[in-house]
Length: 368
Image (cartoon, rainbow, N blue to C red; front, side):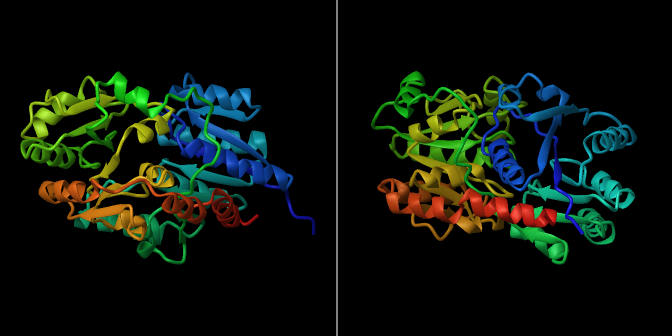
C-alpha cells in the first residue's frame, strides 16, 4: 500500500516580535517534509499578521494562515476542523496551544497524527496538589491519542510512553534582518569598553529571575565592580514598564545607571555580541534558546541550578549558582569575569545541537 505523503499543520499560538530560533526551526522541518514529497501549513494568531517574520514567510512562498486563538474552545475546534479539511492535513504539530483542546481534537480525529510540543515551564520550581492532579489528567488520562515532544526532560516523568525528550536545536538560518554589530549596541546604550555587560532575557521577569540578576549586579557595583545589566524586555513588560517592575520587586529604584532596558528584536545576535556574559536566573525553564545562542558564540553563561538548564552544565563556559540566590549569582559573575570566548565550546554546541538531527527526530514523531 502506497504511503500517504505528509501534510503538516504547524498550529502555533506564537506572536512574538521576532521569529527568533523558533520560526526558522519550523522552516527547517518544512524543507525536509518537502524533500519527502509532503507539504506544510503555518497557522499563527491573527495578531501576528503584522509581524515582519510572518510577512517574510509569505514572501518566501510559505502557506501561512491566521487562527483566532482568542475564540472560545468550541470555535477554535471548528476553525481547526475547517483547516484540516481544506488542506487534507495528516499531521498537526501544536505549539503553545491548549493541551486539553488538542487532546480532544486527537480523540475526534483518530486518523490524524497529533503532536504537542511542550516548550515552557512556568511552575517556578513549585507544584501544588492541584497542578499535580492537572498534570495527571493531561499527560496520563487524556493523552491516549497524542504524542508529546518535550524540550525538557522534566516533563517525561508524567508519561514516559507518550512524551519524548528532544532539546531544541540551533537554527542555522534565521529570518532576514539587518545586523547591527555588538559594538554599535554598546555605543547606542552608553556602555563603555571596560564595562562588563550582562544580558538577561526577561520577557516574563518573575519566571526568568530578573530580580535576582538585578540584585546580583547591584552587589557587584556596591563592591566597586564595573558591571552593567541589560534586561531584554518583552511584549507585555516593555522597556518603559520594566523600571517600575524592578522598583516593585527589588531593592533598586529601577533608575540605576548600571541598568539598561532593551526592546526585543529579530537581530538577537547583536545583543549576544554586545554582551560579555549571559545571565539565566530562571526559577524554572523549558529549554533556553538564549543560552544555546550565547554558547554557540563560545561566550560564558551564568545559570541558576534548575533542571531545565542541566543540559548546559557540561560546557566550561557555564557557571552555576543556587536558584534565587543573588549573592551566588554575583559570585558566579566574578568567576566568569576572566572567561574568554571559546571556539572549542562554540564548535561543540553547534555540533551537539545540529538542526538536521533535530528535524529528523521531529519527523519521526510524526510517524512519517
